[in-house]
Image 1 (cartoon, rainbow, N blue to C red):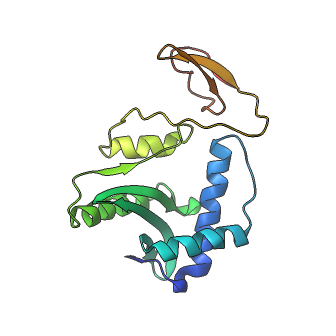
Image 2 (image 1 turned 90 degrees about the vertical axis):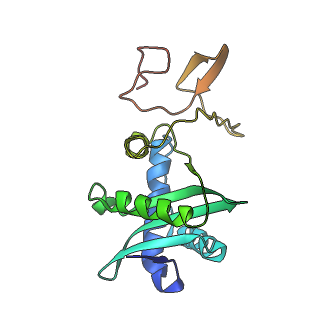
Length: 177
């Protein structure tokens, strides 16, 4: 079922990568169409890294997982399941495989990042034993993006540009619409 991504997977991998980036753009409230040419460029980069694997059933590529490694420490950079197959156990099977794969290479931990607005992914990983490390990722936009809210966090005022509409802001009962 799991195999190293190869050129044989090109068309199906491009489709999954496009789905992934379009989904993430919606998570951060910046929906956009991702052309196949852009997704194919990512696919070629991932192929050259040699740390991307596909999940295949009966000739259909239903998922991708991409790793990053640095001196024996591994990160899941991307875990992608075909939108039509989410909730069917594929992601869980891929994650179990990934954990065994990195353990076989001597890893003592496996790291990953989740966009805070991607609550299904956050729940997915927490339910499978992943701990929140409280890493704070910051960014500076070089284009105008009015914040949806400002919050006080650890004694600092921070701008919030995306947050799930059904969850209150940290330290507040207020929701962003």
